[in-house]
Structure formats: structure tokens, C-alpha cells
Image 1 (spheres, rainbow, N blue to C red):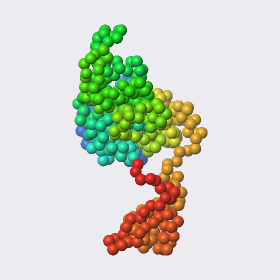
Image 2 (tube, rainbow, N blue to C red):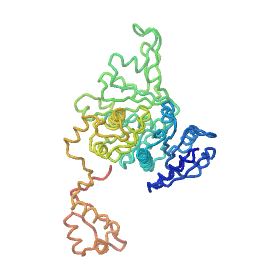
Image 3 (cartoon, rainbow, N blue to C red):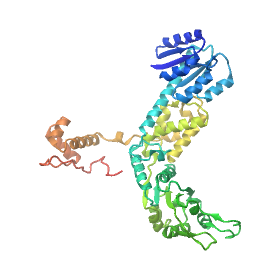
Length: 480
């Protein structure tokens, strides 16, 4: 049962609430008429909800509400007052109260409000559980990956690889579709690496026109060209000692690629209009959503520049391959944009979550955030509903075949073959023991192994050997 604390200096009102809530038979209720004991009572108990009168002598309802928000932010608060004060209601809501009701309160309205407030508390708990599952297991630099939310095992393996690469001083090429978090990963590399105390400069490489590249990238001296009234440091100089992120490197024009290559080869450059050679002490991280090997084949990207940039490479999975992260990210963005828009939306309906889970997200995580940002603004209720979603998303999902996780799409034969392999490995390759565990005869096991292409050497004196894998349907190649 949910635990509710009622604080009101009017004992008659207090008894009324006590009887009403106990008769509902779904709450544990504690009542307090002396507001001076509010802080210690709240701190000592584990309450899910506080029903609070605002107009009390001694410690005011506002002071109690402030104490709850500072020390027990997980506790929902419903305000009860005998004075219809709009300004007080607005202020209470901004301070974190769930709702504001005036006495005399309609019984049904009160119970409905309490149920909704407790539902929001439950949803907050679910969000916290989801966050707890995002332990970023195996990462040594969890704080440096702030802004990245995932529970996807493959993506976690990628982040562990990022940690290893970050500790080197290699140039890095990050590949990923738009919105997959390339800049977040680049910033994590900066925070983890040896250059963490030096500048991090990010620039969209596609914005460089050939004629402006030298000036922007290398800088220029005063009088270097018409309009150069004063000297200007270039991007390489701004990033000196640190990291320069060249986003969308695949958009660079070929003449610009040649100039960048010369810097990477020699580690030196000249400001435009200067004869003084300068050293380029900078680590380059390049990112792209293009297949650069294809660009090389079509003559749109220099192979030698590719090799200079691609010393260490990172590939980021699109969101459609991380469907287990959609719910987690959706609730994160719901909370974020609810606060930004000063709106209290308790949760996401099952219908909406189904739509979000089935959509393919060509814009990836950035698109999901934009969808939630838009929906929060349009939603007028306590739960995010279908009508708040962009029409294009609903249309795309309802026209498409429902997305089914890969594991669910496996045939019975594939599942049976997978289970036999697991048991064989557990039994050390011993077919007699495996057959006994599976509840079939040894002959039946051998028949199934032949059917599924599973080969196993008979155990030798040194013990059993692990089963080998045939090329059966449903097998995945080794690696990620």
C-alpha cells in the first residue's frame, strides 16, 4: 500500500481525511496536526505522498513544501487550502507540488488526484530503475560519458573501445548516422585523454569553402588580404595542445582535403600572409555519416587523407539497432522537456510507447528528442497521448509492418539449435550428459545435431571439448 501523510492544523478536517482515505482501503495513512513536527515526521517515515494544508501556524505549508523538495524530491505533494489563491497555487506547482485543491474538497476528485499523483510517483520509480540499469557496466570513466544513455550491450562495448582509444594520442575517425552522438563521443575522448586540460574546438567541416579554408583553418596576419584589418588565429591555433573535431569530414571539397593533408603530414603550417612557420600540436577527431571508402572509389575523398585520419576508428550504432534504449531515452527527454516547458506530464501511454518503439528513427537519438520536445508542448493531459505525436511518425508506423525484435523472429528450429549448443557447452561436449539434461535419448541428440549442423568431437582423456558451430540459419558471425 502507498503511505500518505496528512498535515493540517484543523483536527476536524484531519479526521475527515483520515476516515475517507482509510475507507478507500488502498492507503496507509498517518495524520499530523502540529506543523512544528512536520520535518521530523517526514524525515522519519517513508511516505509516498504528502497531503498538505498551506495555511498553518508555526511552520507554514510553504516551508514544509520547500523541505520536501530539498530532502525528499521523490515524494509527491498535493496542496489543500481553504483560500482560493491563484498566485499561491501557481507558486506551489512551480515548487514541485503535484496539484492544488480548495476546501471543501469533493471526495471523488481528491481520490482521483491522489491516484494520479501516486501513478506519477510510480512512473518516476520506473525511470529510476531504468537509470539504475544504465550502470555503463565495465566503463572506467562513467562520468566522462555524461549525456550518453544506453543499456545496449553492443553500444557499451563500443564505449569501452572509446575509452581505450581516448588514452592514446591517435587521430580518430568516428562514423555514424546523423543524430547518433558523434560529438558526444568526441567530447568524451577529450575528457578522458591526455589533452583533457587543453581546448576542444568543434567545427562543421562542410562549411569550409575552398577560398576561405586557409584563412579559417590556418588564420591570417594583418593585411594578408583586403579586409584583413587585424591578425586572426585559425582553428588549429585555437585548438593548440588540444583536440580539433572536424564534423562531417566527408563534405570537404578536394582542394581543401589537400591542404588539410599537408598539415597532418608535416605537423606545420603558415598563417595566410605570414612567412613564419608554426607547429600544429593538435589531435584530430573527424566524424562523418558517409561511407568514406565508397567516396574514395568515386574520387570524392582522398585515400591518403583517409589513412591519416583513420588511425583509430569508431562506429556508432543507429537507434533502430538499439530499440531497448528507446523507452529509456523517451522518459529522459519527457522529464527534460517537461521541466523546460514548466509542464507536469506523468508518463507515456502504452499506445505511444508502442509507436515510439516501432519507428525506425532516420534522425536517430536527435530525432527522438525532437519528437518528445514537440509532444510535451502539445500535450494537455497528464499522460503523453497519440494525438501529441507528429503525424508523420504515426503514419510511418501504422503503414509499416510492426517491428519485431530479432530474438522474437527466430524459428523454433533456430531456438532449439541454440539451446542444444548452450547445453553441450555446459556439459563440456559430453553428449550423454547433454541428452540427459535435454530429456532425450543420445541417438535423438545425435540426430538433432546432424540436422542443425552441430559438430562435436568425442571427449578425450583430458575432458570434453566444446561444440563447434556449423553454418546454420540464425547463427551470427563472431564479433560485434
